[in-house]
Every structure is written in C-alpha cells, then in structure tokens.
Image (cartoon, rainbow over all chains, first blue to last red; front, side, top):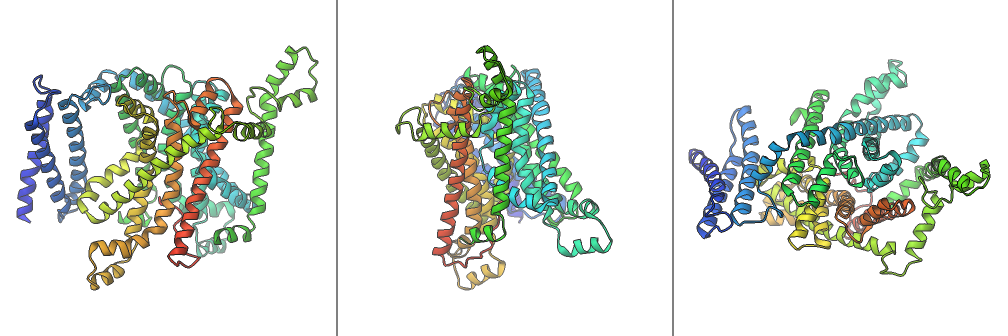
Length: 321
Length: 305
C-alpha cells in the first residue's frame, strides 16, 4: 500500500510536469516540426508515467467517501490531460500542418479571441433553435404517450410505428423543414422537435406501463380516477424513463439544430460557422466551435442529470450510485 | 419468429394498419393544403379559370411541390430505382449502395472497437476508471455535427471516399455497443463465475464460455441501435463536403435545386435501408439463438441504454 502510494506520489507529478514541459518545449523554434528521437523518447516516457500513475490511482481504495470521489475524478482527469498533452506534443513536434489538425493551444487561443462570434452562434443554435424544439418535441411526445395510454387502440397502433420511426434517419427531414419554415431558427426547431418526439414517445409509453397492478389497485381502493392516478402514481413512476428520454434528446437536439444549419441559415449559428470555416480550412475556429458544442452538450446533459437526481431520489439506480 | 406470433396475436396488426392509413390520409391532406397556393398561382398564370376542383387536382401533380403527394414519391422511387440503369448517377440504387457500403464498413469497425473496449473495461480496472467517464462524455458531444470537419481533415490528408464516412459511422456506433457489452459481459452472476473458478478456468476461458454467451442478447440489442446510428452518421457525413454520391449527397442536391420529390424519395430510401439493416440484425440474432440452442422465449433486453 505505501509502496503504491509512493509510486503515485512520484509518477503523477512526474507525468504532469514532464508533459507540460514537453508541450512548452515543442513550441521552441528549434524543435517545432523537427523534433529528434530524444524528444519522442521523452514523450513516450511521460506517457508511460501517466499510464502507470493512472493504473495505480484506479487501484486505490480510500476509506472515506470524499477520497473515493477524488479518485473517481482524478483518474479520468489525468487521462484527459494526457490526451491533450500528447495531442499538443505530437502535432507541434511533428509539424503537422494546422490545416490538418490544430494543436489544442491554438484552439484555446482562438476560442478566447472569438468569444463574441461564438456567443452569437450559441444563442442562435442552442437557445433559439435547439431549446424550443426540444421543449415542443418532449412535451408533445409525452402528450401523445398519455393519449395513447388513454385510448389503448391508438397505443397498440402507434407504439410499433414509433419504435420503427425512432430508428429512422430523421435528420434527413432537415431540407424539407428548411423549405417549409425558412432559413431562420423555426425550421431548426421543427427538425429538433421531430427528432426528440419519438424517443420521448417510446420511453414515456414504457414508463406509463411500468406501474405494478398492486399500486394501481391501491389507487382504485382510494377511489382515485384516471387523472388522479396518472398524476400521483403513474407519472412519478415513469420519471426514470422520462429522464432517459430527456437525456438522449439533449444530445439529439444539438445535433439536429447544427445539422439543419447545413441546409441553409442566416449568417449566424454553429452549424453555419462549422461548414464555412471548414471550407476556408481555418480548422482552429472549427475546433473552437466543436469545443463550444461539447461544452454546451455536456452542460445540458449535466443539468438534466442533476434534475434527475433531485426528482427521482427514491429510485434504486440513483440511491446506490 | 415468436415475436411475429405475439405481434399478431395481441391484435396489433389492425391498429397499426389504422395508424398507417391515418398517416397516409394526413399526408394527402397536407399535400392538398400545402400546395394549394402554389397550384392556384400556377393555374392563374396559365390563364385557366381556377375552380376548386381544378386546383385540388393540380395540388397532387406539382412539379416542385411544397408537400409532394405520396403517389408522386412512390413513382419517383419507382423511376429512380427500376427505371434507371444500375450504376447510373441518377439511379437511387447506386446512391444507396454508396451509403450502404460506408455504413457497413463503419458498423464493422465501430462494433469491433466497441466489443474490444467492453472486454478491456470488464477485465482491467484502470481502463474502466480512466476511459468510462470519457466514453459517456463523448456521447454528450454532438459529434454528428462535427462530421464535415473530419471529412475535410481526412480529405486534406489524402483520405477520401469510403473511409472518412466509415470513421464517423464507427464513432457513432461504438458507444451503444460498448455500454451494452459491458452490461452483458457483467451479466453472469457471481455464483456462475465462482463455479467457473472452481473448474480452475482461466480469465480467457471464463470470457469465452461464460461471459460471451451471456452477453449475446445484449450484443444484438445494441447492434440494432448501432447499425441505425451508423446509417445516420454516414448520411450526415455525405452532406456538407460536396460528396458526389450517396443518399446524403442526394438530399443536399435536392435541397439546392428545390427538387422536393427527390428529397422525399431519398428519405424513404434511407428509411427502408435502416429498417432492412435492423431487420438483418434481428435475423442474425434469431439464427445465433437457434445455433446456440436457446429456448424461444428468451428474455432479451429491449434496449442497451
């Protein structure tokens, strides 16, 4: 145990400091693009140190809860840092042209200088296109699921069709929506609404069926009607399913909004920026947009996951995890 | 086989047919309303006296309708699938094949990668700890949106054609496979693993004899999701870079030139392709189950998520 702790204490800083030093050294004029074997040997050593440190860290089992959480956080962070450093070192050291693959430092620099443009794109794509479409799609999916539950014939016909539809390449309707609703955000919101509708319908249908007959019988002994049972028993029981759909849809919404912009936009938006900057081969701006999309997507997903934790604290998957 | 039996015995066929018919009727109605103004204008320009019946008939036969009528889409499908020689640029089958080959290549790469990752995750704790959070995080990234740059970047590196599209398709399909297989490989109970250990089975033998067969239902459930995702990835990858062939290129060309019927036909071809691929996985699943001598009513998980 102490042996391992000593190794971690030695290897982690070595990997971090060595990696940072290498990333900085790679930029020196004598090295960039013409790195010799010594440089690559150092890079491989830093990588080995980080891998060993990650292995030992992962095998740690601290006694306290905070300690465990720290370890769970530290290992993936170390791995992420390793990937970034290697990316920087390889791209700069081997002199990979920026047209092909810009180093992370260039992307960060571009992100910082292009903040106003990125902000405008974020507002257009995430807030104006993805969010309304997401709300419309999820709410109507839930509404139709409740309707199908109320009218079983409709449900028996609709759910198989929805199951098939949710496997279809729905992004493909983007050109049609652009033709119907114009270039601005309504067409994107429409694509997002259709894309998010089916997962919500399928999950809500499964969720509404998840209530056991004992609980339903109990509600009946209380003389609760359909809507009372729905509100007090079945919708709460369906929450884990609904949140699954909400989380899946969070990513789908961003994808739909961005892809729909490839078919025509006003001159703002993340998809628009990605396609024209890719055509102009200024890949650092493209990667800055990707970073923004990743941040927005993860934040959106994280918010819903937090809401799930708060709303379904009673569910075993949350309690034990 | 058993699924079809329950499918009809529960009396689903009739409601499904009803819903499909209702959708068709709604579609015709949408075509009528959506094309009304365009048809009326066209008739007025032609100098004909626009009466209601004339306009209604014209809405069903527009050259570039806002909403093409179902029979227009069907006839376009027929024309571009049967009417065109195979290999011609205007044959939908040619485009479908271009998309299908990239989809299958990406699907193969992505599934193998996903299975390999899952095996590594189940066996190596450090891999699980360092990779799993990133694998989950990778899916909150709208990667599909990034497809064009990957194509551009790979194109600048001299890689064009099938492979860049397959890379994107592979990225989209590895996740469901990894998550499903981690679940599936961990599905055997502790008691079963302990039994294998009393036989002094090695980790490789436990994997081959216990974990792998137990994971098969999960594998097929996630392969179905993965193959659909792979097709979406390929189509989107064909969109932005001036790709010459493929269903995605067909969509984009149709959108540029206002060829609505062509867009709808390409969409339906994509939908049919997706349904076929998922059905194919279903057949493979049934065949595997038969080969392993599984009893019919095996309770496969509905989804890997």
